[in-house]
Image 1 (cartoon, helix red, strand yellow):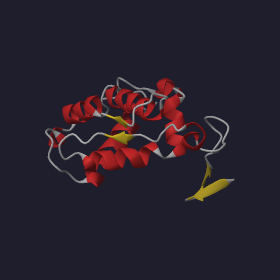
Image 2 (cartoon, rainbow, N blue to C red; image 1 turned 90 degrees about the vertical axis):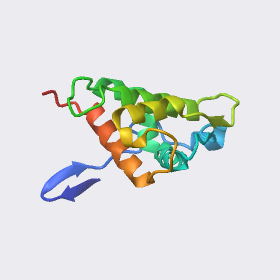
Image 3 (cartoon, rainbow, N blue to C red; image 1 turned 120 degrees about the horizontal axis):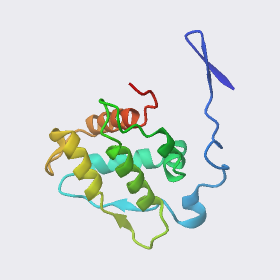
Image 4 (cartoon, rainbow, N blue to C red; image 1 turned 135 degrees about the vertical axis):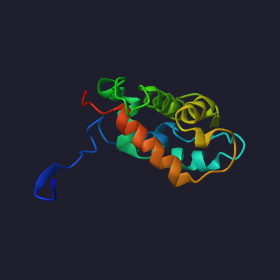
Length: 147
């Protein structure tokens, strides 16, 4: 299946691109059923992260380490690959096989605050602003175009 996009053919993303689709791992193995610890008033961040964590193609991409071949640490618009590294690390903690019921996103939060000072501290922020920053940052960290 291909989607028409302004005269260009864009191939549809196959759900099996990063592994054979089956029942979600969380159903079969109890993985991905972890909450995120609230660090002050960081529920805005946790809700956005939980949403992204449940985008199957994105999560499989990061859990399979396919993202590493796309990492661009030299992109002047990116975060030197640090944001992608921390996001992958957090997803592995959420989807890992440990017995804990929650994960503390402390390192991820620290990384976000380093590159986006508006998220420094533990005050409430807008979830959409965090999500926009995160998606843009991941896009730039994983942009294969070299300048």
